[in-house]
Amino acid sequence: MAMGRRKKRVRQEGLWTPTAALPVSASHPFYQRLNQILDERKFDEYVETICEDFYAGEVGRPGLSPGIYFRLLMVGYFEGIDSERGIAWRASDSLSIRSFVRIALDESVPDHSTISRTRRLMDVETHQAVFQWVLQVLAEKKLLKGTTIGVDATTLEANAALRSIVRRETGEKYEEFLTRLAKESGIETPTREQLARLDRKRPKKGSNDDWTHPHDPDARIIKMKDGRTHLAHKAEHAVDMETGAIVAVTLHGADEGDTATIQETVAEAGERITSVVADTDNDEVAKQVSAEGPREVVTDKGYHSRAVVRELAEWGIRTYCSEPNRGRQRWIEQEREQQAVYANRRRIRGERGLRLLRQRGEKLERWNQHLYDRGGMRRVHLRGRENILKRLVVHSGAANLGLLMRKLFGKGTPRGLAAARSAIISAAKASTGLWSVPAMLTRNFSDSLARASSPRRVPVAA
Image 1 (cartoon, rainbow, N blue to C red):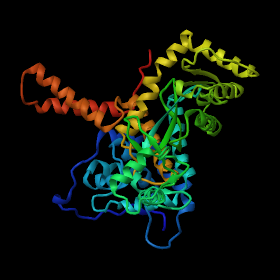
Image 2: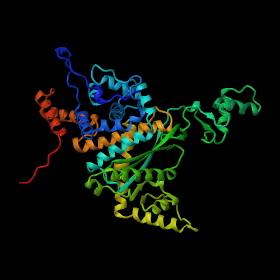
Image 3: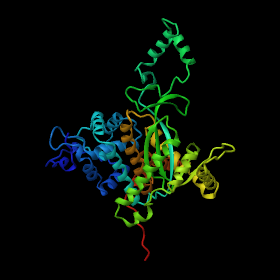
Image 4: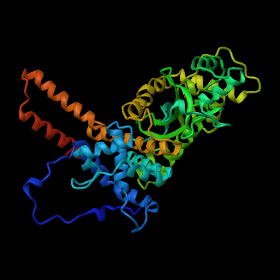
C-alpha cells in the first residue's frame, strides 16, 4: 500500500458552499489542545519519516496515514476502548474525534481491518519510537527526571479460551486427552461425570509445560487476582517516581515471576532515559534528566530476592524493595547477597525509603487503573506478544500525553474535562437554587476553557 501523506490530502475548497452543508464546530477543547501540541512538535512529519519503509511509492490504493493510525490508537486510551473495531466505530460516531484524527466529514473512517493491517505491517521498534518521541516531549516540559523509578506488574487477560488449549506434544484437545486417559484406565465409553472426576484427581492438570493455545502460544495459564483461571499475559511498567511519567513498558509470560522480569524492565527504562539525553540538543533537558539512567528502583515485596537485590547493586542501582518476613536467614557463601539485602533493609527503614514506599500507590498502582481498567486494556483483543506490545506502548504514550495535558490543561482525559464541567454546573445550580443554568454560565465556562487551553504566560516583574 502507498503512504497517504498530509500534503496529498489537502484539497482545494469549492468556490460556492451551500449554507446547509456548513459543518457545526466539533472541536473538543481537550483534543484541540492536544492536536496543537502534536502540531507544534511536527508529530505527523516525524511518524511519516519513521514509517516510510513500510509503504510503497504509488502502487495500489492509498494506505492509512501514520498520523491517523497512531492518533486512532491514542483514542483507545482517552476513550477507554479495548478493541480496534470499537475505535473505528467511535471515530465514525464522534465529530470531535474525527477532528482530532484529522478525517474530514465527507471522508470515511478507516475500517478496523485497515487499522489491524497497518499494525501488522509496522514493527515493534516503530511503535516504541513513537513512545520515545513522547518521552522527549515530556522531558522538554520538565516532566521527566529518570533518577528514581518504580517498577510494577499486572496481568492482562488473553484473547484465548481455556477450552481451546491443546497438548504441546500431541496436539490433543483437553476433552480428547481426558477421554484417552479414561480408556487407558479401563473406561471404554466415559461419561462427562467420569471425565470430570478423573480430571479432579489428576495433579498439575493446568501446567504450562504441557498445554498451549494453538492461536496464541504466548498466552499462559495463570490464576488471576479474583481467583479465576485464565490464559493471560503479564505487563510490567517502570514509572518516574518524581513526575509520574511512564518510562518503559514490557510484556512477559504470565507465569514468569517478578524476580525474573525486573531486570529487563529496568534495562529498558535505562535505555529510554539515556536515549532522551543523547537525542536532545536542549541544555535544560540534559541537566534535569539522568544521563546515566535510573539510580534508584522502588518495588513491592514481590520483587525481593537475594539475586535481584545483588544484581541491581552490581549495576550501581540503589534498591528500595519491600522485604517480606522470611524469619532468620542463613548466608553461607553469600556475602554479596547479604550486604545487598542488609543495605536495602536499612534504606527502606529510613525516612526517604518510607516516603518512596508510600508513594507507590500514587505513582505506580494508579497506572494499573488508568492504563488497563479505565483505559480498556485489562482484556486484550489481540494475539501474540508483538501485537499486544505494539498497542501497549502507544497506549502508554497516550497516557504520558494525558499527564502532560493534566499539567497544562488541568485534566488528563476528555472525560475528566466533562466531569469538571458537570461539577461546575451542579455547584452553580446548588448555589442559585435554580433547576436551569443560565446561558451566561455556559458561555463563561467556555471562555475559561479557552483561556486554559491557551499557553500560560508568566508575569514579568517590572
